[in-house]
Amino acid sequence: MTPLKSGTVDLVILAAVGEQPRYGLELVQHINARSGGLFELSEGSLYPALLRLSKADWIVGDWQPTPGGGSPRKVYTLTDSGAKELERRKGEWSRLQSAVNALLWRGAPA
Image (cartoon, rainbow, N blue to C red):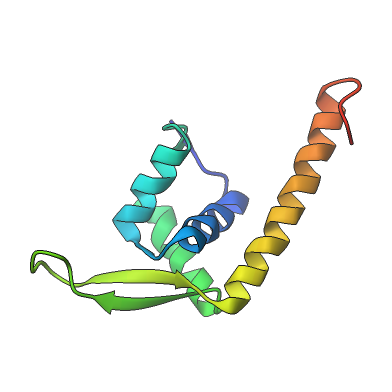
């Protein structure tokens, strides 16, 4: 498994939370599953990223009861400004991907 690069951690968290509200461990499991096990998001990079995204007002965390009566979980939801930031970053990612592809493969669309 490959750890996520720092620039992509925020993007994949925003995308995962944009699909549906999620709590920390659920985010780790979702990102691992959707990447086919390629990305390994550790707690050491997840929780600082969640704090950073919360401070930027792109996500908001609310404590919610756990089904079955366990300890409450902090569930993160995308804010309106977070949805705008996600779209901006997706566009940026798409442009970067096109530029790298153009450099790697001759005749690749730019």
